[in-house]
Image 1 (tube, helix red, strand yellow):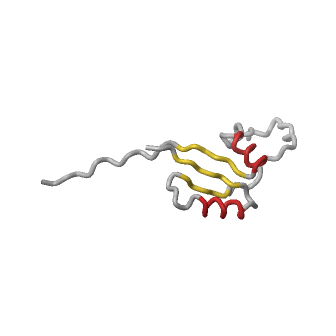
Image 2 (cartoon, one colour):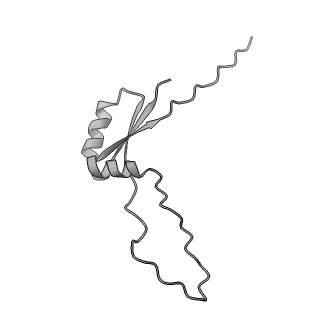
Image 3 (tube, helix red, strand yellow):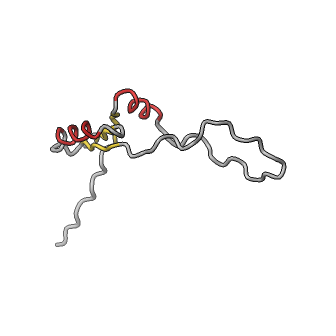
Length: 97
């Protein structure tokens, strides 16, 4: 099986998404999607100093967006191409005799 491709188009660039959807509509290995994510949810300001009676530490870990290179591509070029693995082959049909 061939690889599949996901074309992610940045928010606010719906004309590019429409063009790509039309261009690849007959290609089942390509899917076009507009980035639905909102901006960064975390604030970049410094968190307040914990007080002795403050028992709720910061629970958020690293940035949850696992592919910063995709974010960079979206910012620089308005789209990113992600290679997806091939779809698994369906099991053979059961043949009743």
